[in-house]
Length: 541
Image 1 (cartoon, one colour):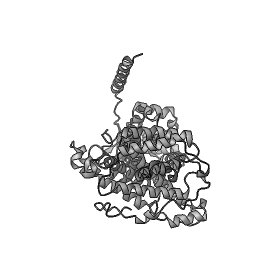
Image 2 (tube, rainbow, N blue to C red):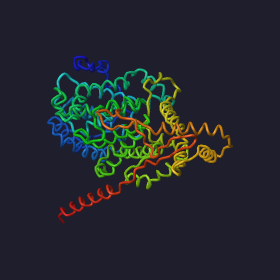
Image 3 (spheres, rainbow, N blue to C red):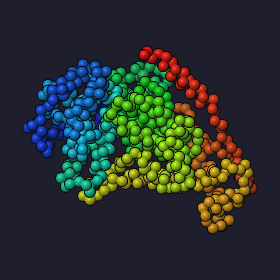
Image 4 (cartoon, rainbow, N blue to C red):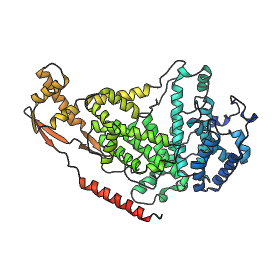
């Protein structure tokens, strides 16, 4: 598998040992075939699904994938998995490609719904099935396979998710039996982080998506540089979604610079022909916003999160009928509001009125109030809820009784909290500076001492205040993206609504806050009302 014959241009690594793996040694807890008979409706669905995939009818495949499959799941397999490959294969004439795709859905359904989650052997079998799938796709010539973009996105997203799930399962050895530990040591190549990176980079290279995005961003025709594989929708979209998968993976590993870098030439703040899958858009915004926050680029984080949340408000109805990733989208929305609240405390600035309204209605203002007054516990609580489930790039050997599952999360939380502690006094200083145009340092030091309730030591207070004021100047100056193909581009800008300088122990303060542009708000509402009115007139009763 992944042989050099299949893909030698990009160094796609060989995983030949995986071919020997099969599911024959798996002994289920009960003999399902002894009394189970597959419903005729399910048989007809599987045959029709296979025919549509072979014929490449993408709109019908999308309907079967998004609507029929979940409906049959609820009707026939609410508390049990779908039939295994031994039952399905004869029905579809042992169609190898269809069986790989079916097993991808089969294992994904087990991860998502079946009580207790996947067994260890199911985790391994799912990995080997992904190996088969990517071997097939990354062959010498483009494969005759067309799948809807929604499925392609969820395939890549699920691939990274199952790696994340396996890494967390592997780290909790206190809950594993000796047999499970032995299986993990035996199957030590399965779900290896280098393998995941290799697959995603190979899909990116095969599709030539980076060059396509570069040409598209400059106004050219991406097909002119797509190459033999990149002209096909399957490879083009898998390459694009793999970039987002790499963004997520690098964020989970704590490499935020690389996370943003992989998205070079993707115009994060504009709609494009590649950004039509809502779940992909939301996931991209969440991880980009989080990476910006951890890089102390709060203005970019606020812009990214705000635009994503506004997009969510406008497209709520798109997710009402889509059950597969609905929970994940809702959770990421809540996480983005928490991240936005943190960023607005650390770097106050104006955001859209509708975002402010949600922050007020859902009691985020109470959390923000606590954080503004230096409640470190509230900062940590918001961060641990909003952050991704971090992983270790180099997990230690598996030993009975070891439990390092929280180590990566603790480390990233510590990094974030160290930054917060440095800024702890800045909201208090800001609140005092807003009240004056000139303020003696001794007077501000006295205010700060009274706020802390500590005993007076004028010399120490004066020195500490000078440090805090320098910190204020430093922390309020961030790199902000203005233009350029990379999200890492930008210029240093002061994001504070206050500016000041110190002359002979006197602080001179200037309010640089720009007044609200209420006219724009009312114009947007009028246009929205007119559009709604036009739609109502076109409705025939």
